[in-house]
Figure (tube, helix red, strand yellow):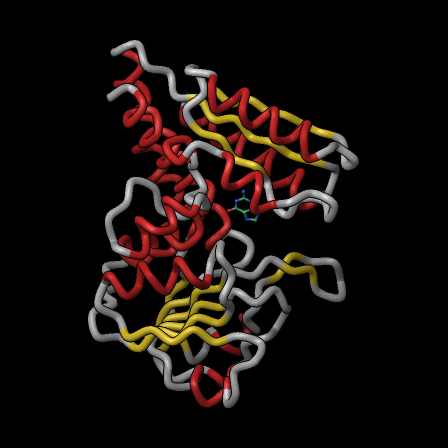
Length: 282
Ligand code: GUN
């Protein structure tokens, strides 16, 4: 028998906790503020940015949106980041990825002041995560850890297999799981015997970006399945990287798509924004 881990429910609990903290901060004259930059009009990015704005409204966080045209220059983008870096009323800066191909993502991420880097993508913050001493955690991996904590799932000694080695999910996920004493394997497109490795996992984190990538024959009985994917199936319906219907029968816990990891990413962003505001106000 499996249990669905509801990101919708858990993210609501996190956002309520953040909202309560924001009310307290406002009594001390602190109004946390998040600035989001979106370059171009990618429909999926537009949806994410709108969801971030709604979450800010829910939590009482001031949100600023900067929409740059798809052909914006690197100089335009950099100077916006510099302006927001210098603006004392702005606590968090998020540049929605991916950027249009002509823009240098690394250059922008390196420019965001580490204390305003609510994505934790700046090399300084990445370094802090590596040594297990951090202010901000990357939103998706931290959201996943929060889900596991909420369900009282300990990772101590567990065999965790992450599929995907991105800087946004796979790599920081491995660091957070290691910190909780898991044995971590990171698989990727060059991994040999992927099925064999995944089928030994107590916890599977799928962050591949391909519908039905994880099939039931790859899942050990009782495994915990975390699905980070957001894809469209042939009918245009939102789905994850996991063949949910088939895999759930073997799982002990499984996250759905939508309503799983996605809302947790946004809830963590809210948490990071108030952390940033607290750091900046000393
Ligand atoms: N695009 C997809 N996920 C993310 C994220 O967590 N942060 C940013 N900035 N862009 C993303």
